Length: 385
Image (cartoon, rainbow, N blue to C red; front, side, top):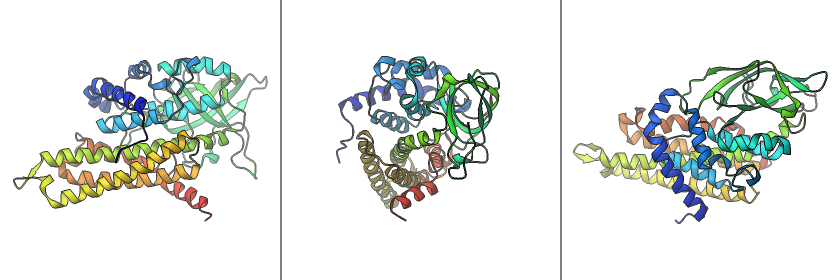
């Protein structure tokens, strides 16, 4: 069926991204995997390409687009080539919405121009050791100084994507203790300079997948954060975080669909080339049936994602809709990718094959952005259950 979710501008952008990946990423991607992160200079190349400025208003150096579909194009093209842009998706899809929605005019003029060029990379630090999905249980604190000029930040964060290379990190911290009536109160967002005294990047975490995405532990020991670097109102962070979750979960759903679609293409290519008992693996009925099932699943995944993309651009994607899309796409993509790996036989278990990297990369999609169990709770609640 003809796909209608993208227009001519999106498709022109797709070709630009595809050419960029072929020239700048594929030839060196194995080196990035070995290093466990992309080179810092690569982000400046993405900035020059305009990737970071798509949704940034023109007065700050961006293109002023409002459609999330351009990000979907990038996700699909990376999956198609079996590569990743490292932690850059956090920079644009997670951090930027907070800066656009809650930064003051002075903050936007200070932060957005270097954001667009890649000179200032950002990350967001929510999760803490021992809290996981329970953000209200965070213990990192930010105490306002007696003269009211700065906060003193203390605590630790973990699983911070982009945390190694980030220049500024949006840190969620408690500026007041929770009340018995509302555990979520008293949390504030601070945009912390990574060069601040007392700010420490701990271990770069070794992950099962997403090898080119730097993920770090961060710690803060009496870090002074100017009040001018507070994002939004004090104590309102939990409500801010909730407002961006539908887009975050949509982005994960797009990634799951794109990885499943890529897995089918990798498997088709492999079974046509690989011979067993003197015949191409593609000639066996089992191979055809498995891939037919996978194709039907990918069609369903695409339909869910495209519907959600249209709803998001129209401002109509609800929290429950996004949770449902994430739940379905991530759970089903895992099944598709597993079947496609099986068709590779022993070679599917070798990391030199993109199907093996996809298998490892997609596993976390059922955990981050809210676990599948959390998604089921959200959907069930929307059903009145």
